[in-house]
Each structure stands twice: as structure tokens, then as C-alpha cells.
Amino acid sequence: MKYFVKSFVVTFFLLFCTNSFAEQKIVVLDLTYVLNNSKAGKGAQDFLKKSFNSNSKKFSDMEKKLKKEEADLLAKKSVLSKEEYTKKADSLRKQVIDYQSQRRSALDKIATQRRESREKLIKELQPILEAYIKENNISLVIDKKQILGGGPGNDITNFITEKLDKTLPSLNLK
Image (cartoon, rainbow, N blue to C red; front, side, top):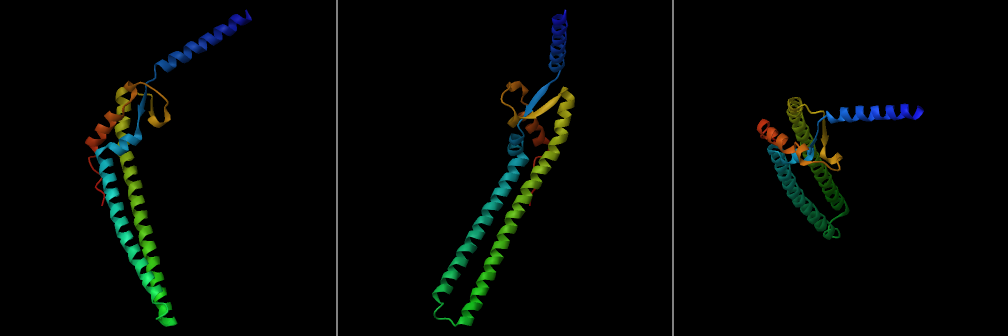
């Protein structure tokens, strides 16, 4: 009798749990793909890449100029008086500090723009995702990075990307 009760309780829980999970619909969304391959995401990436490359070229040219000035100053060290050499060395040091601060601020600006554009994309994606969840009675949306396997019928990435492209064609970064 004791084993009969235990087996009945275990069977009851298994049936109950199985039925409750069978009614839930779980889908997969590759958030990285949506952010990188939507029209707005690609446009933002292209803008940020161009901005980074132009800044890199500008700062590379400035760095070469500063190194040349340093080499010229070192070559003239024996010719210049001590005060004049110190004055030019201080001037060069100030230019280097200015170069470093400009470079840091340019990189910070690009990082800020990247973060803000990602936040804006996610903000625009949220209502699209919520509407899809309501329309299709979805219980759970999981990021594709967190899954080991699953059928392709559960992947809603392309559908959500198309909806985002219609809603937000560009971020208009400047």
C-alpha cells in the first residue's frame, strides 16, 4: 500500500508537470543578429566604423608629426641653449598632452554613440517583441546565445528583424 501511494503521487506529478509544459510556447531570438543586421543597426555600425577610421587616420598623422618634432628637437639639443631647449621641450610636452586628450575624447564619443544607438535599437525592439508575444501566445522568448539546441521553427529572429526594419529604418547618427 505504501508503494502504491508513492507511485500514485509520482505519476500524478509527472502528468501534471508534463501537461503544464506542453501548453507553453517557447521561441528563440538571436538578439545580436537583430542588432547587427537590421537596417538601422548596419547603418549605425557603418557610421561608427567610418568615424573611427577617420579619427585613427587623423591621430596617426598627429602622432607622426609629434615624433618628427621630437626627433628634430633632440637633434638640435646641442645647438640650442638650455633655456630655449627647455621651452621647446615643454611646448612639445603640452602638444602631446593635448593630442592624448583629443584622442581619448574622440574614442569616448564613439563609445558613447555606440552605447546610445544600441539602447535606442533595443528600445524600439521592445514593443515589436511584446506585440509578437501577445499575437502568438508566446510564454517565453530566449536569447539564442543561451540555448544549446532547438528546431528552426522556434526561431523568430528574421521576422523580428523585418519588423524592426519597417519600424526603424535608420538611427540618424551624427
